[in-house]
Length: 267
Image 1: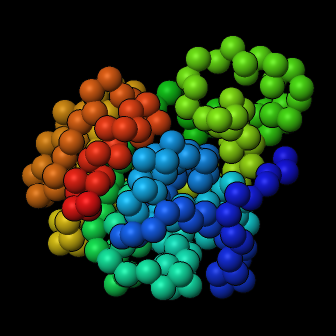
Image 2: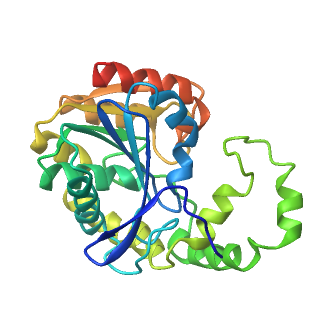
Protein backbone atom coordinates (compact mmCIF):
# COMPACT_ATOMS: atom_id res chain seq x y z
CA UNK A 1 0.00 0.00 0.00
CA UNK A 2 1.63 3.25 -1.16
CA UNK A 3 2.03 6.13 1.28
CA UNK A 4 2.80 9.78 0.62
CA UNK A 5 5.33 11.55 2.85
CA UNK A 6 4.35 14.83 4.52
CA UNK A 7 7.92 15.73 5.45
CA UNK A 8 11.49 15.19 4.30
CA UNK A 9 13.19 11.92 3.46
CA UNK A 10 16.62 11.85 5.11
CA UNK A 11 19.38 9.37 4.33
CA UNK A 12 20.43 7.94 7.71
CA UNK A 13 23.12 5.30 7.32
CA UNK A 14 21.70 4.26 3.97
CA UNK A 15 18.07 4.11 5.12
CA UNK A 16 15.40 6.52 3.83
CA UNK A 17 13.85 8.02 6.98
CA UNK A 18 10.67 10.10 6.91
CA UNK A 19 10.95 13.18 9.14
CA UNK A 20 8.37 15.94 9.60
CA UNK A 21 9.27 19.29 11.20
CA UNK A 22 6.89 22.02 12.38
CA UNK A 23 7.25 25.25 14.32
CA UNK A 24 10.26 26.87 15.98
CA UNK A 25 11.66 26.99 19.50
CA UNK A 26 12.92 24.35 21.93
CA UNK A 27 13.01 20.99 20.11
CA UNK A 28 10.51 18.24 20.92
CA UNK A 29 10.86 14.84 19.22
CA UNK A 30 7.73 12.65 19.02
CA UNK A 31 8.09 8.89 18.49
CA UNK A 32 5.03 6.78 17.70
CA UNK A 33 4.32 3.22 18.79
CA UNK A 34 3.85 -0.10 17.02
CA UNK A 35 1.85 0.23 13.79
CA UNK A 36 1.89 4.03 14.09
CA UNK A 37 3.32 6.89 12.05
CA UNK A 38 3.99 10.62 12.27
CA UNK A 39 0.28 11.17 11.68
CA UNK A 40 -0.56 9.90 15.15
CA UNK A 41 0.80 13.22 16.44
CA UNK A 42 -1.03 15.53 14.01
CA UNK A 43 -3.35 16.94 16.69
CA UNK A 44 -0.61 17.14 19.31
CA UNK A 45 1.65 19.01 16.88
CA UNK A 46 -1.01 21.67 16.30
CA UNK A 47 -0.82 22.59 19.98
CA UNK A 48 2.95 22.28 20.39
CA UNK A 49 4.30 23.90 17.23
CA UNK A 50 3.31 27.44 18.23
CA UNK A 51 6.16 27.47 20.76
CA UNK A 52 8.32 24.45 19.88
CA UNK A 53 10.30 22.92 17.06
CA UNK A 54 8.32 19.68 16.72
CA UNK A 55 10.15 16.81 15.04
CA UNK A 56 8.24 13.66 14.14
CA UNK A 57 9.96 10.53 12.84
CA UNK A 58 8.51 7.43 11.20
CA UNK A 59 10.34 4.57 12.90
CA UNK A 60 12.05 1.88 10.86
CA UNK A 61 9.50 -0.43 9.27
CA UNK A 62 6.69 2.09 9.75
CA UNK A 63 4.93 4.80 7.75
CA UNK A 64 7.08 6.21 4.95
CA UNK A 65 10.40 5.07 6.42
CA UNK A 66 12.20 2.15 4.82
CA UNK A 67 13.72 -0.88 6.49
CA UNK A 68 12.68 -4.39 7.40
CA UNK A 69 15.57 -5.24 9.74
CA UNK A 70 17.02 -3.64 12.86
CA UNK A 71 13.54 -3.00 14.18
CA UNK A 72 14.30 -3.39 17.89
CA UNK A 73 14.30 -0.34 20.18
CA UNK A 74 18.08 0.07 20.35
CA UNK A 75 18.47 -0.07 16.56
CA UNK A 76 15.57 2.35 16.16
CA UNK A 77 17.27 4.68 18.66
CA UNK A 78 20.49 4.66 16.65
CA UNK A 79 18.48 5.72 13.60
CA UNK A 80 16.77 8.57 15.49
CA UNK A 81 20.16 9.66 16.89
CA UNK A 82 21.29 9.98 13.27
CA UNK A 83 18.27 12.18 12.55
CA UNK A 84 19.12 14.46 15.51
CA UNK A 85 22.73 14.70 14.32
CA UNK A 86 21.58 15.61 10.81
CA UNK A 87 19.27 18.31 12.15
CA UNK A 88 21.84 19.63 14.64
CA UNK A 89 19.35 20.05 17.49
CA UNK A 90 20.39 20.20 21.16
CA UNK A 91 18.70 19.79 24.56
CA UNK A 92 15.92 17.75 23.00
CA UNK A 93 12.81 16.61 24.83
CA UNK A 94 12.00 13.20 23.37
CA UNK A 95 8.54 11.75 23.92
CA UNK A 96 7.72 8.16 23.02
CA UNK A 97 4.34 6.45 22.99
CA UNK A 98 4.04 2.72 23.76
CA UNK A 99 6.94 0.98 21.89
CA UNK A 100 8.19 4.49 21.09
CA UNK A 101 8.89 4.90 24.83
CA UNK A 102 11.47 2.10 24.60
CA UNK A 103 13.05 3.93 21.68
CA UNK A 104 13.02 7.26 23.51
CA UNK A 105 14.82 5.83 26.55
CA UNK A 106 17.34 3.97 24.38
CA UNK A 107 17.94 7.22 22.48
CA UNK A 108 18.57 9.12 25.71
CA UNK A 109 21.23 6.57 26.63
CA UNK A 110 23.23 7.01 23.44
CA UNK A 111 22.66 10.62 22.37
CA UNK A 112 23.99 13.61 24.31
CA UNK A 113 21.48 15.72 22.39
CA UNK A 114 18.62 14.46 24.61
CA UNK A 115 17.96 16.53 27.73
CA UNK A 116 14.69 15.04 28.99
CA UNK A 117 12.35 12.12 28.32
CA UNK A 118 8.59 11.60 28.27
CA UNK A 119 6.99 8.15 28.43
CA UNK A 120 3.40 8.00 27.19
CA UNK A 121 1.04 5.09 27.84
CA UNK A 122 3.67 2.47 28.58
CA UNK A 123 4.21 0.27 31.62
CA UNK A 124 7.77 -0.67 32.65
CA UNK A 125 7.31 -4.27 31.45
CA UNK A 126 4.70 -6.88 30.55
CA UNK A 127 4.34 -8.38 34.04
CA UNK A 128 0.74 -7.16 34.34
CA UNK A 129 -0.07 -6.52 30.69
CA UNK A 130 -3.57 -7.49 29.54
CA UNK A 131 -3.08 -8.33 25.88
CA UNK A 132 -5.68 -10.53 24.16
CA UNK A 133 -4.90 -14.26 24.51
CA UNK A 134 -2.83 -15.61 21.62
CA UNK A 135 -1.68 -12.16 20.47
CA UNK A 136 1.75 -13.33 19.23
CA UNK A 137 -0.03 -15.72 16.84
CA UNK A 138 -3.21 -13.81 16.04
CA UNK A 139 -1.77 -10.34 15.49
CA UNK A 140 0.40 -11.31 12.48
CA UNK A 141 -2.69 -12.94 10.94
CA UNK A 142 -4.77 -9.80 11.54
CA UNK A 143 -1.97 -7.65 10.11
CA UNK A 144 -1.89 -9.74 6.94
CA UNK A 145 -5.65 -9.30 6.55
CA UNK A 146 -5.38 -5.53 7.05
CA UNK A 147 -2.65 -5.31 4.39
CA UNK A 148 -4.97 -7.20 2.04
CA UNK A 149 -8.10 -5.07 2.45
CA UNK A 150 -6.91 -1.61 3.59
CA UNK A 151 -6.94 -0.22 0.05
CA UNK A 152 -10.41 -1.51 -0.88
CA UNK A 153 -13.11 1.06 -1.60
CA UNK A 154 -15.65 -0.55 0.71
CA UNK A 155 -13.26 -0.14 3.63
CA UNK A 156 -13.20 3.62 3.08
CA UNK A 157 -17.01 3.66 2.94
CA UNK A 158 -17.35 1.70 6.17
CA UNK A 159 -14.71 3.87 7.89
CA UNK A 160 -17.02 6.89 7.66
CA UNK A 161 -19.12 5.37 10.44
CA UNK A 162 -16.24 5.02 12.89
CA UNK A 163 -16.60 7.27 15.93
CA UNK A 164 -13.02 7.98 17.03
CA UNK A 165 -12.41 11.14 14.97
CA UNK A 166 -8.75 11.04 16.01
CA UNK A 167 -7.33 11.39 12.50
CA UNK A 168 -8.03 13.65 9.55
CA UNK A 169 -8.23 10.50 7.42
CA UNK A 170 -10.58 7.94 9.02
CA UNK A 171 -8.45 5.18 7.50
CA UNK A 172 -5.21 6.49 8.97
CA UNK A 173 -4.69 3.79 11.59
CA UNK A 174 -5.54 1.01 9.14
CA UNK A 175 -3.19 2.48 6.54
CA UNK A 176 -0.39 2.68 9.10
CA UNK A 177 -1.03 -0.91 10.17
CA UNK A 178 -1.01 -2.08 6.56
CA UNK A 179 2.47 -0.69 5.81
CA UNK A 180 4.13 -1.75 9.08
CA UNK A 181 6.85 -4.35 8.56
CA UNK A 182 5.44 -7.82 9.40
CA UNK A 183 8.52 -8.59 11.52
CA UNK A 184 7.49 -5.87 13.99
CA UNK A 185 4.87 -8.19 15.53
CA UNK A 186 7.56 -10.53 16.85
CA UNK A 187 9.75 -7.60 17.93
CA UNK A 188 6.97 -6.12 20.07
CA UNK A 189 5.12 -9.18 21.35
CA UNK A 190 7.93 -11.70 21.82
CA UNK A 191 11.39 -10.14 21.85
CA UNK A 192 10.29 -7.03 23.71
CA UNK A 193 8.67 -9.07 26.48
CA UNK A 194 11.98 -10.81 27.11
CA UNK A 195 14.03 -7.60 27.00
CA UNK A 196 11.73 -5.71 29.37
CA UNK A 197 11.69 -8.59 31.83
CA UNK A 198 15.49 -8.32 31.95
CA UNK A 199 15.62 -4.51 32.04
CA UNK A 200 12.28 -2.76 32.66
CA UNK A 201 11.70 0.82 31.61
CA UNK A 202 11.55 2.09 35.20
CA UNK A 203 15.05 0.71 35.77
CA UNK A 204 16.17 2.50 32.60
CA UNK A 205 14.65 5.77 33.85
CA UNK A 206 16.50 5.40 37.16
CA UNK A 207 19.81 4.69 35.41
CA UNK A 208 19.49 7.66 33.05
CA UNK A 209 19.22 10.31 35.73
CA UNK A 210 17.49 12.70 33.31
CA UNK A 211 14.23 14.55 33.99
CA UNK A 212 11.40 12.17 33.10
CA UNK A 213 7.67 12.72 32.74
CA UNK A 214 5.27 9.78 32.45
CA UNK A 215 1.79 10.41 31.02
CA UNK A 216 -0.81 7.70 31.56
CA UNK A 217 -4.42 7.24 30.56
CA UNK A 218 -6.69 6.22 33.42
CA UNK A 219 -8.57 3.81 31.14
CA UNK A 220 -5.57 2.15 29.47
CA UNK A 221 -6.83 -1.28 28.43
CA UNK A 222 -3.31 -2.77 28.22
CA UNK A 223 -1.73 -1.76 31.54
CA UNK A 224 -3.07 -1.09 35.05
CA UNK A 225 -2.75 2.65 35.61
CA UNK A 226 -2.21 2.53 39.38
CA UNK A 227 0.54 -0.10 39.22
CA UNK A 228 2.30 1.81 36.46
CA UNK A 229 1.98 5.07 38.40
CA UNK A 230 3.56 3.50 41.48
CA UNK A 231 6.51 1.97 39.68
CA UNK A 232 7.58 5.10 37.80
CA UNK A 233 7.01 7.30 40.85
CA UNK A 234 9.29 5.02 42.87
CA UNK A 235 12.25 5.86 40.61
CA UNK A 236 11.69 9.61 40.77
CA UNK A 237 9.74 10.23 37.56
CA UNK A 238 6.95 12.78 37.51
CA UNK A 239 3.76 10.89 36.69
CA UNK A 240 0.55 12.47 35.41
CA UNK A 241 -2.75 10.70 34.74
CA UNK A 242 -5.14 11.90 32.05
CA UNK A 243 -8.65 11.07 33.22
CA UNK A 244 -11.02 9.56 30.68
CA UNK A 245 -8.20 8.60 28.32
CA UNK A 246 -6.89 5.18 27.35
CA UNK A 247 -3.60 3.91 25.94
CA UNK A 248 -3.11 6.94 23.67
CA UNK A 249 -4.02 10.02 25.73
CA UNK A 250 -2.47 12.40 23.17
CA UNK A 251 -5.14 11.28 20.69
CA UNK A 252 -8.05 11.40 23.11
CA UNK A 253 -7.05 14.49 25.13
CA UNK A 254 -4.47 16.34 23.01
CA UNK A 255 -4.98 19.68 24.78
CA UNK A 256 -4.24 18.14 28.16
CA UNK A 257 -1.10 16.39 26.88
CA UNK A 258 0.11 19.60 25.21
CA UNK A 259 -0.27 21.39 28.55
CA UNK A 260 1.69 18.70 30.38
CA UNK A 261 4.48 18.71 27.82
CA UNK A 262 4.78 22.49 27.78
CA UNK A 263 4.86 22.64 31.58
CA UNK A 264 7.52 19.93 31.70
CA UNK A 265 9.58 21.64 28.98
CA UNK A 266 9.26 24.93 30.82
CA UNK A 267 7.60 26.88 28.03
